[in-house]
Length: 113
Length: 114
Image (cartoon, rainbow over all chains, first blue to last red; front, top):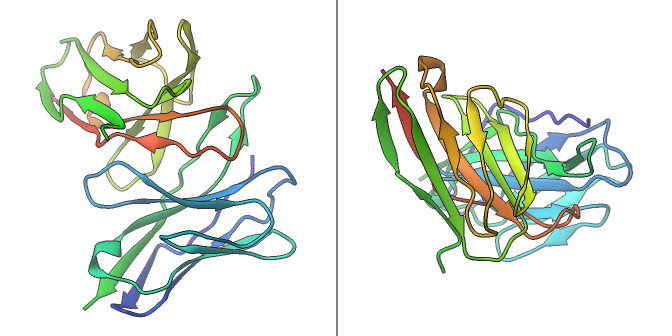
C-alpha cells in the first residue's frame, strides 16, 4: 500500500494561499491521490482528488508532480474557517477489490488572522 | 440534504454494556464504512459493506459487529463495551467501488466507556 508523508503542522496568514505538501513516493499507476479535511469535532470532508493531471474545484487546487511521487493542495485564499487537519490519502484496493481509506495523522493547518 | 446521519452524537457506557450506533444515508450509496478515531490519531477502518447483506472486516474489527439489511442503514454494535473502545466513531458512504468516488462522512458519535 502506498504511504503518505505530510508535515505535522503549518500556519498560513488569512487571505494568503495555503500550500500543503504531501509525499507519496510509492504510489502505483492506478492509485488516486485524495485530500480530505477535518474541522474540529466534525466528520472528514472531501476536498479534491486526482490521478495524473492537476485538478481544480471550488474549494482548492491539486498539483501532482509529473512522476506522481508528491502533490500539493492549494487553498487559494485561506480563511479562518479553513483551519483544520488536512489528510492526503492514496486510495487503496483491498484483496477483495473493495476500497478503504488509510488515514495518517495529517497536517494541522492554522490560519492566522 | 441529509447525507450521512449518525445517532447518537454522544454516549457514555459502563464497562460490559452493549449498544448500537446508528448510521443511515440517503444518497443511495452502495458502499458504507465504519471508522474509529482515537485522540490525535487518524481514522481506522472497523467494518465496511459493499451492499445490502454483504459486510467485511476492516483493520480493527474486534469487539464490534455490523449488519446491512438495507441500502440505507449500516448499524455498528458493541456487545461488551471496554474502555479501549472509547473513541469517536464515523460512518461513511460512497457511490461505487471505483477509485474516483469520494467517501461522504457523518459527524460522528463520541463514545466514552467508563
